[in-house]
Image 1: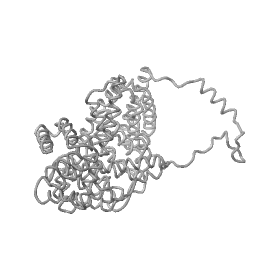
Image 2: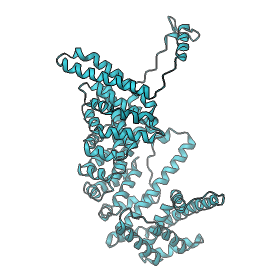
Image 3: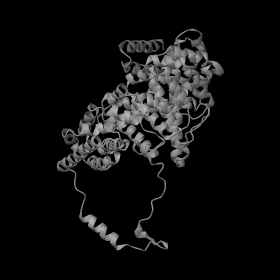
Image 4: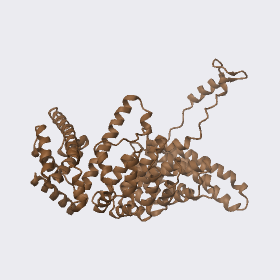
Length: 549
């Protein structure tokens, strides 16, 4: 899981090239490997090459490359028109065109020249070759675009990168990339490489210009292509990368989330994760793919209409089954349920109706045993222990959020009674657990606040927003949710639960005022992301807890 994006993209492409490189002739003899044998001609060649350094890429070089490319392109067009029925006659012109496309890759080493490339009006010629009758030429263009938009090439060159990407998009690169990809076959190694490269180009374009995420979904059938790939039953590299690209396209786009929902995307993603309801991924790559699918699902569950689709597709029931099986997807299922139930009471009601409370509170009490990632077994012991602890903490935070969502979605009736009764059973053990978590997160946040105060004493200025965000990172949000759950419990007016809370606070030399302070800070920082009306409702609910306590 520690593989970088850059390395991960190429992992599947390079998978077939596992044979070790052959030894150069200088180290070979009729008797085999001779480490002391040296070919003097090789040393002379190396010396000559060091005296002739590679030509620097400047405007003059760019113009020379562009003129040569345009000439080769015209020759190829003319040859194809002249010898329509005789491919052998225009084969040489296509070899020349291929060579010039390869030469253009050197521009990736000088991204500051991209505005000059765009000004030369060569971008339309390059992009249009994606529809060339010779798939190899089209794929040469894909490889060229991959190099030109690579994140390493564009580092510290934001403005030139934007100029190039704008020009590519204006010349229909998105449509032509996807059209070309649709004619490629994964069975052919070269074409499979081109498919990966196409997805990489799209990812790179989104990185430079986030609006591309919506444009590519509006103008092409990429979403449908990706859905087909993630529904393949067997794990393979293209399925992993398709899930990653899909997650990127959905991440910050409500339009794409709604669009995919209308294409039965919720069902498709549920079908993908359902394959792991009773089995674990077999490798770190497969784990990553499953996490990508759950990222897609959580993004899909942002719009209200997709929450409804999730409930109708029995997504709640599937997530509970995954939790009961205690496999690798355990924590991801909790997260998906939390997304589904946030501001959507029907999902909360379904969860209670299908006996989800027992499963949720087993997780809350920390009693559930589950599968850890395969990638943990590949780490050295110290790193493994740290990662394992962090993994358990993340699960803990998700369960806290899930229970807070349940309280927010079920405000009255028998379901509310069933939820509250969980905190009464077994001699208030859930209250004890809640207060244990409250103290742990409270201590963590207090330590962070003291650290920030010390930084200010050391003349490091932090504004209030930055300080608040630092505290959120240290666990303040989970602490706030615990305080909200305590508020819900307190407002139930159950004397036994109230007495237990006060007793446990007193044992730690705390009082209800400490909880109220946390609730007040939460109240004051509720945002209006869901709209001003939702903000007012949220603040009114928190104010009710503060008043009741």
